[in-house]
Length: 177
Image: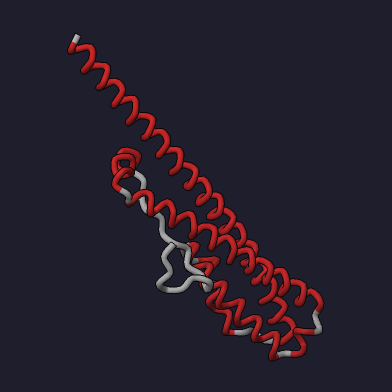
């Protein structure tokens, strides 16, 4: 009789840990889904922005009738194996430069397609800010969960790794999420 009681208690404990494990794993998978979806959308928007920047550079070179050496960095986006973080930073630098050139050169302001592409690029920039904020928010939640004591076993079993933050202009250096 004593053996049955002990075995029943052990079964209840194992069952409880299994339920806790399933719930914790569900939370992590939900966060990973949100993180991965936002990361894919960030990559998609970076590709769109790259195409727009390429078209803007062509217009600038055509209208100013000279090969502009300031856009040499953009050529490295296409050839090198840069990370998405580096591509984002480089595209931001180039788009700032393009906006400055637009303000400095009246020839560029007269081209209608140029203005349309600039507004498209600005829309994508706004979208990227929102997506990076969303990504960083859920990456922060995910990282916080993985560092809690109750999630350490799950982290080791499933081999989950901490996510890096997607840094953008909108993040402060010491921001903690």
